[in-house]
Structure formats: C-alpha cells, structure tokens
Length: 420
Image 1 (cartoon, helix red, strand yellow):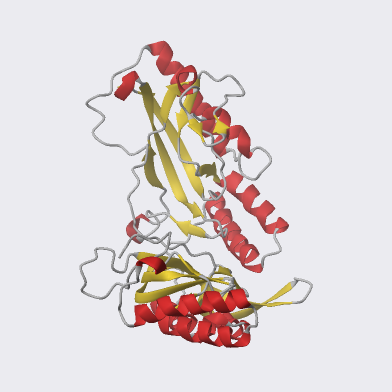
Image 2: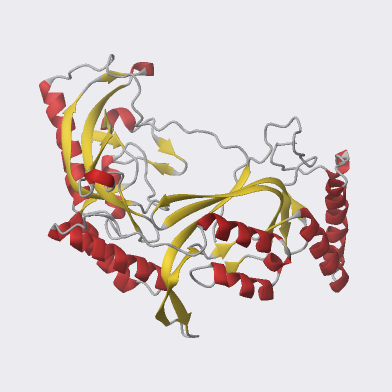
C-alpha cells in the first residue's frame, strides 16, 4: 500500500484556475483567434477519441504542450457525454507574455481512477440522475516560438515535433468519449492479471455499456457493509501500529483488511505518534482513510533511524505542526474474494460487501512503544556490529522521545521534518 507522509500541506495554485481575469481579457485578432481555437479543438478531438490512452501514442500529446508532460502517475480518465470549445480571449501577463485562454465545457458522466474503478459525477444523484455534469476548464495557449526558450523542466526541454504554432497548458487528465473508454477498459481488463483491476474493469464496463445504450438506472443501487469504512480503517491502524506491522506472520493476519495480499516493505518503517484516524466516504463504494500523526522518524533494515525531529511534539503544545504528518490509503466496498494460486491465477468467490484496502505496497506505521520493543528485540538477535551500533543510537533517541526530552546536538538528524 502506497501511503505518502505530508509534513506540511501546502496549497498549489493551478495554472488553469480562473481568477478575476475577465476584466483583463481582450478579444484577439480574428486570425489569431482562429489559430488558437483550431489547436484546442484538435487536441480535444484526439483526446476524446482516446488517442493517448495507453503507452503507444502517449508521448505524442507533448506536441501540444508548452512543458514536457511525462504522463506518469496520471491515469485518471474522465468519461464524457460531449464537450464544447469556446472562443479564445487574449490575456496580458507579467514580463510581456501574452496567452490566450480558451473556455472548454466538458459534460462528464464520471471518472475512472488508476484502479480502473468508475465513480459517477456529481450530477448522478437525486432528481438530476442521468444527466452529465458540466466542468469548465481554461487551457492557456501560447505562441510556440515564445515558449521554446523558457519552458524547461529538469532534463526535458519542450520541443514541438510537429511544428504546431501554438502550445497549451492543461492538466494531464484525459477527457474521453464513452466509446473510447469502453475500448480502453476492455484492453486493460484483458491485459491485466491483477484480480482487483479486472474486477473493477468489469464493473466499469457494465456501467459504460448502460451509458452507451441510454439505459441508466433511475437511481443508484446502494450496497452496505456490516462495518463502516471508519471502523475498518481504525481497526487496521490499531493492529498495524502495534507488533502486527513488523513481522511476516503479523502481515498474514493483517491481510484480511486488504482486497489482495499486501506486500509490506519491512525495510522501511515509519515511527509516529498517531493523533487520529479518519475516513471520508467519497462515493457509494470508495472511501479515503487519513491518519494524522507526528513523525518520529523512519527505521531501515539496519535499525538506523533517519528523518527524525529534534523533539517529540505534545498535545496542546506550541507547534503549529501537531498532527500534520499524514498517511493515506483508499478503501473500496467489495463483494468478492479471490483465492490466488502459486502460479498467480485467481478464482473469484462471492462474499458479503466489506470495506477493503486497495493498495498493496505498504510501508508499516508503528507507534513509539512498538518501535522501542522491536529495536530492542532485533538488537538482541543480531551479531552484526553495525546493526547493534545503529540500534543503540536509535534506542537512545527513541527513549528520549519517550521521556519527552530534547535531543542533544550530536544526535540531531541532518534531515528532519522541520516540525519541532
């Protein structure tokens, strides 16, 4: 299960966000307006046709952008009823740069995420069930010759391979037609050996077929579980943060919380004070679990503690960072279980709906007391002098945290989370 610790959550302003720009926008000359609109229409048409779904033609989309788009980790797909490209405007920004925002109205049925799970859009509820939801985006279009010299990202430099006169800024999410989504889901289902991915793809294909045939249900069929997502998330964290999260046998027991057999990364263990565990249902069968913690460092396989703070935060203390180091995972309501054979083949069996963790790759999260017990035990078992030396230093640090004492200068981490 992949979970990301966030020391400080900083809001990032999207380059497409619409602020009070209308007062600055002007009508561009007709020739410019026609050229700008043409390139946006060309991009939207190819995107809706599913041109860049899958690896075969993915990098070709870079011909339309001011900056190199790796497209890695950006697998969300928006399923459209239709879209409308509006007329461009002219906007004068700082440093003399001129861009041309274009209003694009997307009428969306829903979203397919990286697990091939479909979530209906906001319009699929109540009295407006069966209507696509409108989302308005404002891709910014620049003259290509103006952007080639100033848009560089790392080792990648923007190069317009097809010589298009205009380049855009647009999030790398794909907006595709229902037909394109059906082709993509079929391909992903047939090429995957992952039982959860195939399960989700099958359910998504059923929904897409209903949309294509115009036979949407009059209301959603709501499934329910005996235990809430909040309760499941808290039980899992309570067990994981104890000794269950540190041994293969413990993970055999924890496997019942997962949709598939988890793969714990026992060479990277997060030590933290757990402030709270919350879960928010974001759809009928999807929930986001968030664990608020105060980080106390990371343990590696040699019992070396890294990235630890100068002192342990306490409830009601002066630090504004209290509880801000967060871990997340996703729960899905699933009515199937799988028996996976040694050769990787899986047999599916019906099961009562239950909330299961979707991610498999997992960096364990443990409490301070658990970490002290673990390092003490592992130190007594090893004959490696380096590991024993690391364990001794780690225990000195952890026991100072236990006593709420600040670390001396010679113990301070070269890299900490900055929240002391």
